[in-house]
Amino acid sequence: MGRFRGRSTTVLKPKSTHQVSQIMKWCYDKRIGVVPQGGNTGLVGGSVPINDEVVLSLSNMNNVRSFDPISGILVADAGCILQSLTDYVAPYNHIMPIDLGAKGSCQIGGNVATNAGGLRLLRYGSLHGTVLGLEVVLPDGTILDQLTTLRKDNTGYDLKQLFIGAEGTLGVITGVSILTPPAPQASNNVILALPSFNNVLPLYQTVKRQLSEILSAFEFIDRTSYDLAVKHGQGRALSDDEVAGAECFVLIETSGGRREHDEEKLSDLLGNLLEADKPLVNTGVLAQSPAQFSSLWALREGVTEAVSKEGKAYKYDISVPLSSFKDVVDGTREHLRAKGLLHDKAVKHVLGYGHVGDGNLHLNIVADAYLPEIQDALEPYVYEVVASHRGSVSAEHGIGAMKTHALHYSKSPVSIALMKKIKEIFDPRGIMNPGKVLEHD
Ligand code: 2HG
Ligand code: ZN
Image (cartoon, rainbow, N blue to C red; front, side, top):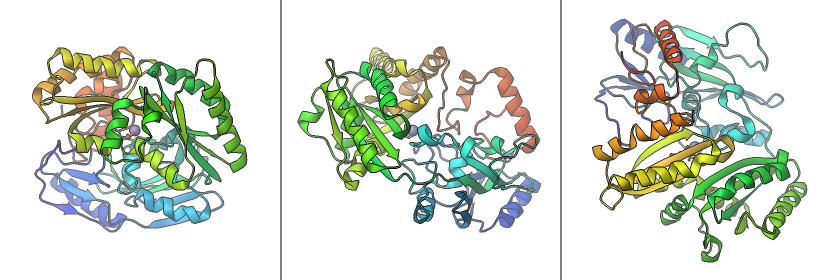
């Protein structure tokens, strides 16, 4: 994101858990801050030092430790790149339960540390469910070995859950045990062009009912997101006829056990949608080949990259009721217009996209440069809107360095006080990823 910059002089790249333990012990004794770093693809500055901390990169810990093709349980070093794990389990007909645009660079340890959501959450749930065990090095160098491969283990407090989403503030994740689902035998996708955002919710209901168990993603991009994705070469553009009059687009993916069965269901759905008396969609483009399948996905997955090519982005990753997605995006645009900030030299675009199936909207504001007046216009405005819906100020990207001041919009004082006590127990010297998640007192 280019928004945070530390003054670190040292990056350490340990090759084993034992080495991580030695590093942590040394830093604990000397009270040196440590920033664990995976693929460094996060969007909230969680893996970036803010002062002169030591950067502890996990990238040299990248071996698969074991895989059981019967249970599908994979145990891997934290530094394994998500795509390489996907490739590893593919010959066994398994997939990773998590998938996201950054798959070629992000690491499984970072995914777990940030509780990354991504594109498969609708189908396989969050990492709080699919991660079975963790190996963690605590700030004083102690190794907490909870790398179990058990599906069931109800023996008291489930400590690993604390590290999932702690963003490296309680310890360094060095190993992950994760349940990988069987690969679907058939996957397909379709992009639908909608005349109005108001149709997204009825469409979601219809699609859920008609596709039921084969629905594996229901993603949404508004017109601005689509136009930017196309402008910056993400995926294959639809024809002018197909996009005419479209206010937004929905990408639906199906994954199931039998191709003919799934294709029949999908084409019945499309037929019903297009032939309805009052159609919810203008048109639908069905992937006809694996290449088209990927290029339709690229239109959605490529929005983040397109946005960063277009300018400097202010990103809000929020959970709000589905029915308010459009109002939040339009309201923010109007708010910026009223402040006189919607023009070429300030804010160029306000766009919304995200995971409809998970109630997660990505509100992006693209500007010519990061300017204090834009920042002041956006915050606390956006957070107050989120709080008025009892939403979340971070649905899936985490708090990192960027949102520590906003935590209270989604967590009560009682919750924050308990979080601080937990931090104190694990990290009494405050050396683990300082300044992230919780503000310094
Ligand atoms: C996505 O869903 C990612 O594409 C990134 O979570 C969202 O860049 C963003 O705001
Ligand atoms: Zn997302």
